[in-house]
Image (cartoon, rainbow, N blue to C red; front, side, top):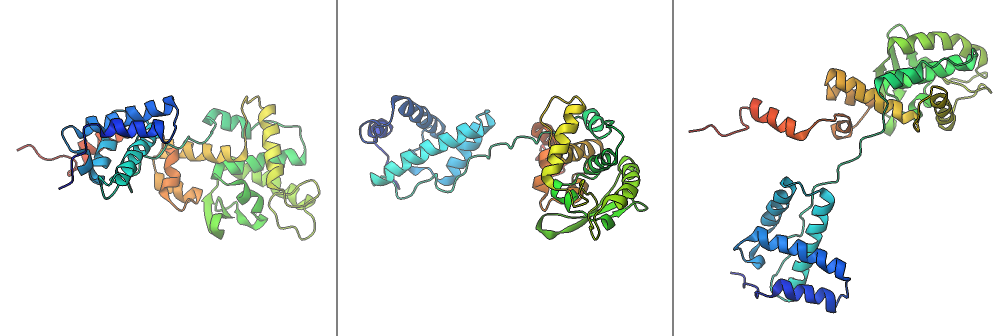
Amino acid sequence: MSRKPPASALERYLAHLVNERRLSAHTVAAYARDNASLAMLAGERDLDSLTPPDIRRFIATLHSKGLAPRSLGRTLSSWRGFYEWRIREKAVAANPCAGVRSPKMAKPLPGMLSPEDAIRLVTHDEPDSPFAVRDRALFELIYSSGLRVSEITGADVDAIDLDEAQVRVLGKGSKTRIVPVGQGALDALARWLPERSKRAAPGEAALFVDAKGKRITPRQVQTLIKARAAAAGLDMDVHPHMLRHSFASHVLQSSGDLRAVQEMLGHASIASTQVYTHLDFQHLAKVYDAAHPRARKKAK
């Protein structure tokens, strides 16, 4: 059985932080609050007897009370420091916080356009020119099929199949995938392809070419979309990937088919696609509890 720490263990630890580690009063106060929460959660339990499952349960309790991941990480760090000190004091043999992780910080949702703004951007009327036709086809295709800028600039003219309404692209990891193409993009491409054939340099295979007839670059696409957004009156910093994010969000909101969106985006993991779901976990939990036969124990 582990030895019960002296009643002054936490106080002596704080004194150690002040006198030996020379931490600021503000930092010591934060450690004091965090370790007071440990003592409160432990209740009558001997702090030196706590195990990793206890620490995980305490972190889950604080999380359920609304403590943010950043604050949980700081709290866990404070507890870990206390137990490292207890190890040096030879009061415990191992740190019960070792291997325990706080919940991950929520990733910020990608910037995206509303459906109205996305359509406003891709359909914005430019002066009548071959390259206005190109730009319309370029941005219609990005939004229609959720393509990365590297995928659309890397696409060759034979990647488009207007009859089958699909495009073949080379994604991350040199993986090829075929993605549906919407009618707006098909119409725009049908107008661009004859213009492209007049302007592409000899032997150039690219679907989209610049004024020199060479394959358009990602930087050129970035410049074009910023100019187009400004001309369309969109008061935000628009970039090509924003159209991809918008595609994912809009399709998912309409269909609810996460797996299909994953396939279209070319995500290796469904976790990469879940950032677009905008779902409330509490709502999901209620649906699960109501629908899953193993969600709750039957009342006796």
